[in-house]
Amino acid sequence: MPEPTYLTPEGEAKLRAELEELKGPKREELSMRLRSAIQMGDLSENADYHKAKEDQGFLEGRIQEIESLLRNVVTIEKNVNRDVVSVGNYVTIQEESLPPETYHVVGAREADPRNGRISNESPIGRALMEHKIGDVVEAETPGGKIRFKILKIE
Image (cartoon, rainbow, N blue to C red):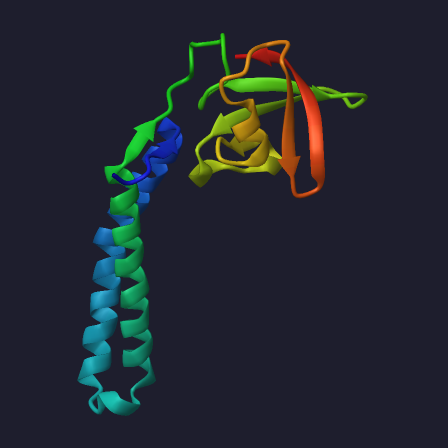
């Protein structure tokens, strides 16, 4: 069975909107480009035709990718379980002498660490899963091993 795709309601809506755009206006625009290029004649040396065919391949590939993701989507609602960390929670952690940091634990497709959104599959996200407030957790990151305490789960 394929891995689930964890998305917030906003992330799912964004993907559905992109899919609608690709299947509608973008496909139509590409179709018109292809028709126009074909009408120019000799396809073997027609750069417009070859570029449109290449773009068509990318478009159809992206449509398939989004449809596959949406088939396996698990929508992350604001998590009401505050006993243990799970996808959808906001978690405040603190490394020894550093100020506390709050992260929103999301699926890999929506991770954006610079904006406080970490993936449940990242080293820190994985280390946080199923832990409670007060737990000291260790994570092996590319920069080395870090230890932090869970201060709050929302």
